[in-house]
Image (cartoon, rainbow, N blue to C red):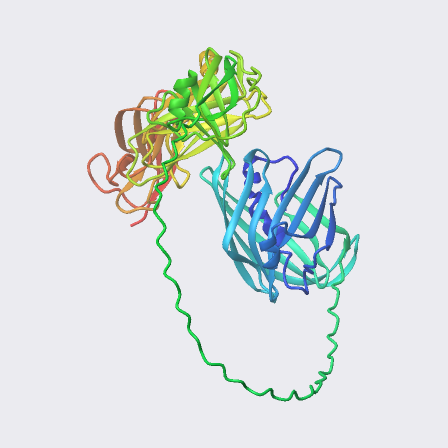
Amino acid sequence: MKITRPMSWLNLILGLSLICSFALTATAQDYYPTTVGNTWVFLSTDGGERRTYSIEESDNDKEKDAGIMVLKIVTETLGTDTVDTDLYFISDDNGDLKLHRVRTEEGAFGVAAVTLDPPALFFPADLPVGHTWDIITVAELNLVGTATTTSTIEVVDSEVLETPAGTFENCVKLEIRRKSVTALATIRTNSYQWLAPDVGPVKFEDVELGIVYELQSYDLVEETPAEPAVETPAVTLEEPETPEEPTVETPAVTPEEPETPEEPTVEMPEEPMVPIKTSSFDIALESGLNMVSIPLMPPEPYTAKSLAEMLGATVVIKLDAAKQSFVGYSVAEDGEGFGIDGNSGYIVNTSAGGVVTFTGTAWANKSDAVAAAPKVSTDKNAWAFVVTSSLQHKETGATYTIVAKNLRTGVVATKKVANDKEYGTAVWADLNHKSIVKAGDKIEIALLDKLGTIVSGPFQRTVTASDIHNAYLSVQMKVGDLRPKETILGQNFPNPFNPETWIPYQLSRDANVTIQIYNVSGKAVRTLNLGHKSKGLYLTTSAAAYWDGKNRAGEPVASGIYFYTLQTANFSATRRMVILK
């Protein structure tokens, strides 16, 4: 199930994993009848949403022949035009529910489309109290990249349940614990699902959102029993005997075949080569952002770089249909960028505009004219924008994710970057041509490793009119170049300790740093003069402040509680630590 009411973007990434909340209701025939035509209607207890579940036939003949059905979930936010439709392709394997593929609408995060090969076991046939199993799904989503979700399901109870659709006995109560991990965050959620024998799902509760859905009505189609086969007794008719005809022997005569004269070989002249016709086609481009396609196949395939050079464009953007995310190229990058084909549309930003002539051979029926996209961008705003970053000092074999956030709108764009790539681009685009970035916006840019730890930045850049004109912003990022937003004194480690410990901290600006260590009486026992430090993170044993557990005289201090204070010209903070000998 996908919650459609307002929530943070990280809740939305659970859309794919939340298929469990309904796929988990699709168990053996006793708890979920999977006959095509079955429907269930739910209503949230606050009256805000209605959900209709139905079992339908697949449009794919191969899937239909394999016994795969479509579980369709339509969610309506009442009083609005908001309707979401999610599709789950399932089959019943002797009571076990198998999931073959999924397609869910995730709003700004695109369409989550996953094929599971081999199909995943989503629900076992037997559901005794205490039974537990795990489900793992992996999806590529816009903005947040890869979302890996582990769902742990446990049968916790069997109880009587009252709903508007009636009272149901022996309902199985399931607890569903989920952990979703992306490059940006890890989220844990908890929910409950109730299933009634011979009925199916009757109630669902989302603990974090405080939403309860109850069954209002259901319609279960009765399966048509197969007609019994009627055996027809076999009747054998005796055929009359046919008298044998007398055999007459005929002497064999083999006539001699006349020799066939060889036909003379006639050499056929080679057909002349027909030259391939080359055509030309003009496209009018406005100054600013345009949406274009390539009308003719060129002699040499275009790349993003060569297309940008031909059009005089600063940015080329395409939609990756498989991942449902945008991919960008800017002239600030080295290399050729991605390939260009004739089956896709592209967003390009041209400074001057004008008429561009394409030459090549036709790969589709030529239309009479191609009009330029309306000019929506101005020197103050743009409906497509690219953040390009050169990446330096990367670790061998590591992968990174660029995260760019518009601090005015809160909209985030991300792009995973392989280790062999020198540039990464994060793209914003609104195909309805609504402004997404304007001059004066502050963009915060950070580089994350595969664990979601910031390894460069975050940096802030203010979008200028020139940036809007070029439709991209360029920034250099070095792994290890960290820019904390605030100064923080961390907890020492290890703690308790004997005899040595490290004191971590981070600085939001360059500063002279001193750490004073006191006993419980407030007497200073040691001063660590760290000197002038640049802004950044000092969190590891190689960078944090080190104390060997000795006083000013070089003597080990006694066991007990001590306090340490970090001081700069603009900051002071104190924490407690324990020496335990």
